Length: 218
Image 1: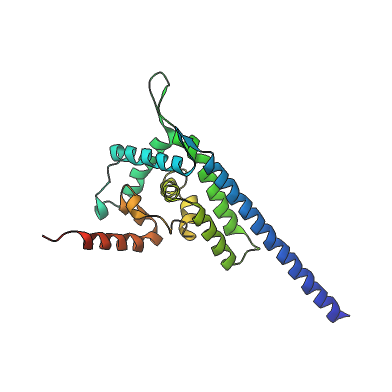
Image 2: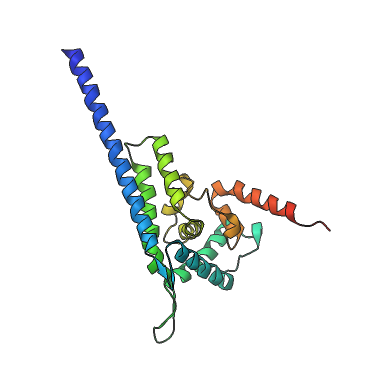
């Protein structure tokens, strides 16, 4: 009777574990679907969805070229100074610009992006804290999330994580789960910005070496 009860308990435990794992997976994919829907309805002028995100990034980079003081200075800039420079620029971009009459001169990027950043953060946080998912499952979920994020979304996510609304909580989760693994360093206004994420340092170094080899010799 004891042995029978023990095996019954094992079967019940496995059944509950399986149900918990299924619940995590189901909720994760619903969250990713919500993120994708939020991106699809994002509009900037005549652009929408992924193309709208590209236009938002173009606006951010254009503003960065006007506002930032550390662009192109490489390792001569400390990490603290670089992040402070990024924060000033990105917060300016996030809050927009208005004239004396309160008319919008440059749109508030935060109105377009804030909910996308928050939703992405909560998806990663949900995966990170999911007790019913093992490490292999979590890695799979993060890979799925990365696959849904276009390069402009990754770049914007990276800078948001370095600015005051995302640092240090969002920054730590992104770095821990290597969410920026697929980012293209060449698309950044300054490739050295990516070095603020330790897991991107080797990738940036490889890109720099490749570019150096392509430079014509005198």
